[in-house]
Image (tube, rainbow, N blue to C red):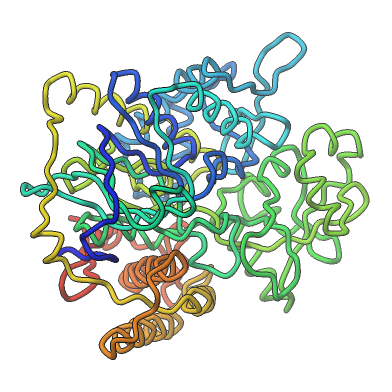
Length: 553
């Protein structure tokens, strides 16, 4: 049984060969790669083309480009951070193909920071035993990558762009192969409202689901749309319980909600310390890398320290950098701090963990294929197996780059082999899909509150049971409203609320099942890692009875 948000009769229809949903490094790299095969490509993006999550990335992109560094060392660091549940074949593809993928990105126009001799400058971040983080503009790496890829896309007249469009549901043919999608376009004239794009294949690169929590580094558009669409279409998701909380997000007060300013891990990579209000370093002795331990370890240490001291934030001390280094190496972070009345040259920076990156997502193979034929996924929306239980710093941009290229190569090969025929939408199947009751727009805030209280950094059976009960009540309320023929208006706010409710329910269901602490999944009632029972993936599906969780064997 598949599910849908909307009626199967769109107001308008367009046709292309491949539709790519998303405008970050993964989506645009996939689109440009597919275009090289001569296929028509339509890029759909929820906001503006340059408004994806990629541009917010500060730290950089990891690759074994430095002297003495090797892909094998990068692999080892990634596997350690992933806490035993990485797919080693996926990690090996990432680290071996990564250096050349970065070079191809440079060839597309991305300008990374270099020394006076023209050599790429490399920094270090948590979990890395080598300096292997490529950066641009000091701490504006994502913005530079986005600029270069957007320019390349705009210069290709054969690549169509649909901006301000929220994807709704996958369309399939009679064989269950992806045949396009429905979407709601805002302010596009003739294409205003709900329409459809028919295609031979669909690539999801919609980014993460950070907005499922009250405080996150993700932009407002990160509402889990891709994972929700895939689940409704019958695709498998994996590892949804592993949500990474970035340890150092600028603390703006106890009532702060929505997107919060990130203080990049690269600041610690250059020598900043984590301290309490008295100036005492609390990471020393907790891990061999001190402040540069993997993110889950640092986040847990900060959270424990906050509990012990009865406070809601700790501090980052970079005062010893001096004004010149702050201005040249971290201009974006400096400006953000100053805008909030903090001068890191003279002040401690208040920080606290916030939701940052989803290590899980739509399950894919090494070619980016999902369990639904013709549906691909890459970037944060996907679970390639690279990140395991905890993403290694700066591996996300590289993952989007490498696996987007793999998807483009697979689609090119299928096209050349004649395996991408025109697809006819199975209207009967679309009509038979179960329509999802739409919650009211204010359900978004309710979901975020429940998730932050019950399934945030600290989790327990009791806290997650409360979250699950609250989410179920929201779902019942939406169903009752729909049965009374008083459904919420079908518009962006209600569709986003429906997506957040679905992914939150799936995340909590998986987190309740994993009765251990591993990586960024921290169970207070099961504080130890249990390899005998839990060194495996949890697979999430949606059927007629709701969310189903199964343990991979």
